[in-house]
Every structure is written in C-alpha cells, then in structure tokens.
Length: 147
Image (cartoon, rainbow, N blue to C red; front, side, top):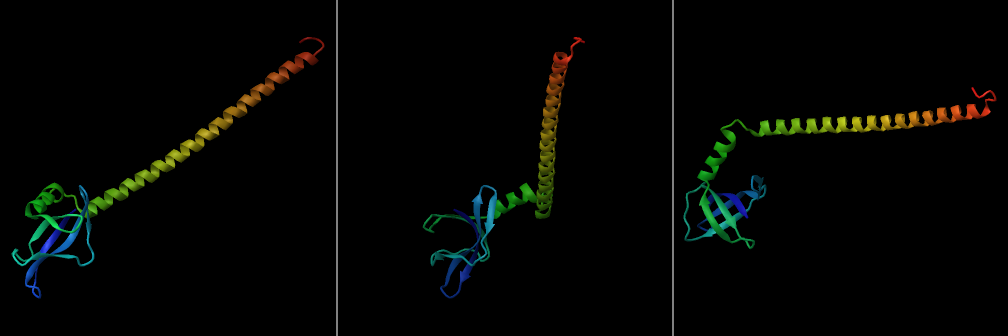
C-alpha cells in the first residue's frame, strides 16, 4: 500500500523515521491518517528533515519502495489546482449533483404517479364503455318495438 510520509529525525534513537500522513485508498482517493504512525528507517539511512516522500509498504509493514514526492505533488498541482479545482469547488459540485439527483427522483416519482392515474382512468373508461355496451344490448332485448 502506498503512503505519503514526512521524514523526521528521532533524536532519542538517533535515526530517521517516516511519519505517515496519508494512505492511498484507490487511484485518485487518499485518506488522511489522523493518528501518529511512524516507521523507523534504520541507522544507516539519512534523509533531509521534513522531506515529503511516497513510500510503498508491504502487507507486513516493510518498506518496498521509497521516493521523493516532489514530482507527485507537482503533478497534483498541475492536474487539479492549476485549473481552479479546489475542495470548495468540488463540494459545491457534489451538492449541485445531489440537488439534481433529488429533483430527478421527485420528477420520476411524479411521472410514476401520473402513469398510475392515467392507467386508472383508462380502466374506468373501459369499464364505462363495457357498461354502455351492456345497457345498449340490454335495451334492445327489452324493447318490444325493436327500435
């Protein structure tokens, strides 16, 4: 699993560690890691303090790959922030989409109700037509003059 992490020096252990900041959930979906989660890099590894890195961890928690996150951050800026897509904009679009969904649901319910009403009226008309036919045929039988 891939993580965004920041390099810190653990003064007590005299070695560098990674503080995990976010975890990749899907291709374009990341989740912030709210709790303090760190991974020791070992005594031989030296890195710049506060450097942002992308780290790939194995299921057992071992570091499989570690790279500078600069290009990744620049790609995010280019893909999302340079076009004016902000969290507020995305929230507004999500709210707008939800309003559309609700309006379409209401329209669909109204159409379904109207369809049921039309079907009921059609059945009433058919019943009335049948009743008229019965009345006409019944009147001819009862009419001695054969109108």
